[in-house]
Every structure is written in structure tokens, then in C-alpha cells.
Length: 305
Image (tube, rainbow, N blue to C red; front, side, top):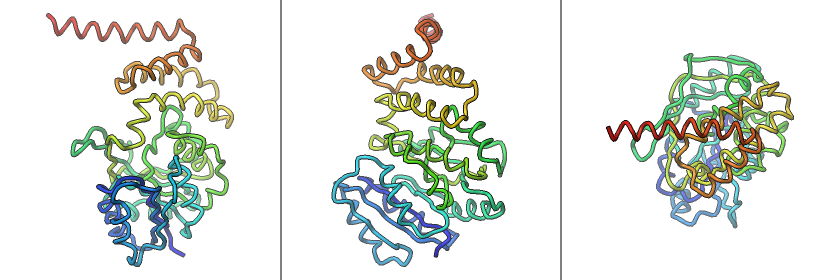
């Protein structure tokens, strides 16, 4: 049995796929096998995947006869097929440093109760760095509940599956809640996973996450899905007794993000705005919106001087 099973779920990422697979196969940590899953791609993905069929690390290649419609269905299928003690979901449009598995696995092995281990990630658009996650420490272990409360309530700190490995055994205790979402399912998954033990946070930047028109998050922002699903996520966290009296504050902070977000299209903006008005009250919403409207007007006035 390998120490780690690497799952590479792919859909129409032919242009990135070879770099992804090579960055997995050439890891300095060697005790792993690979499952490649294709969700009925319509590009040249199959040709690229087939070129790796005889590689000794590639345990299985699976082609869906129809598109599943949800990446989290692929997650579940791949995890349940995996034989490794640990799982790495290596998204097909990302790539990484060749030391990623060595860093995350070795650190996790130092704490018996560690169930999730993740590193920092750079987000790129074409070849430009547009954002980079960071940590206060080079390495840190946190109890699961402390990690969730400090890092996972306002947003998802493990925002890209490729930056994380986790113990397979915890999957048995993960509910199917994560499969109800198009965008935020990973957030639910990491919270439920983290609550089952300790989390290791590496301060090293080892993962590279692409932003491009075909990625899931770009459309999720345009359609306001990141905000629409947030209301359901927060309600679920409330059921898990994770929020205490923080729910209103978290919604207020998320509203502040929304009011400054230029990616949401007009139709979706109206829908999300109405949800915030309903959750926080129209008076509070209007007061916050006015602050940001004034800020924009002041910038315009400054430019015209």
C-alpha cells in the first residue's frame, strides 16, 4: 500500500495537463501512486493522459462516459478508490514544487493526530502573480477546532485542493454536505476533515494555482456563487456549533468584501445584494453600501482635480 494516493481530476485542461502530471511524477517523495480521472473532456486531454498509461506510478486511468457536472463527485469517487494512507487531490490546471509531498508528509508524520497538512500557494493569471497566501510561521500545528475558528470561518484558507494532503481514513466521517455545492464544497470538506485531528500549516510556498477563464472560481465570482453559497455554508457551520455569536459579524465582513468586488456581473450583483439585505437588514446594508459609494466618488473627484 502506498503512503499517498494522488488523484488528478481533469476536465478540459489539456494545455496544462502535462505540466501537472510531470510535477506529480517527479516528486522527491517517492512512495505514492496516481489515479487520473477525466470527466468527459472535449479537448485533447485523452491523448495526453494515454501517454502516461504505462508509467509505473499510474495505478488507474478512469474516463467518465458523461460529464458529472460537479468536481466534488469526482473527489468522492477518487478518494474511495484510493489505496494510500494519505490523499493528494492534484488539480489538473495547477503545478507545484517537486518537494511538496516530502514537506507535507514528513511534517504530518511528526504528529500522530495530524490529519490535514497544507502549504502556501501562489495564484497566477497567465504568468503574472496576482496573489500569494502566507503564514506567520515556517511550520505550525493546530488542533482542528482552533484551526477552523482561526482560519476557516470568514473564508477557506485551503482555497486550492492541490496545496493539501489529508488522511484517507477521515473520509469515512465526512458527510455528503460538500457534494451539495458547486464552488464551496471543498470548504465544507476541509472543515469536517480538520475537526477530526490536528492540522499542519507549512509556511513554505510550494503550490501554483492558475486563474483562467475555464477555472471554476472565475465563473463562481462572476455569477456571485461564492456569496450565494456562503449563506448556506455559514448556516451549516452554525449547525456544527462552530460560530458562537459570530454569525452576524462574519456576514458583515463578507458584505464588506462583496461591496468592493468588481467581478460579479450586474444580474448576480442584484441577487446577492438582496440576500445580504434580507440577512442583515436593509438599513445596515444601505449604510455600508453608501460608505463604499462615497469612497468611489471621492476617488473620481480627486482624479478630476
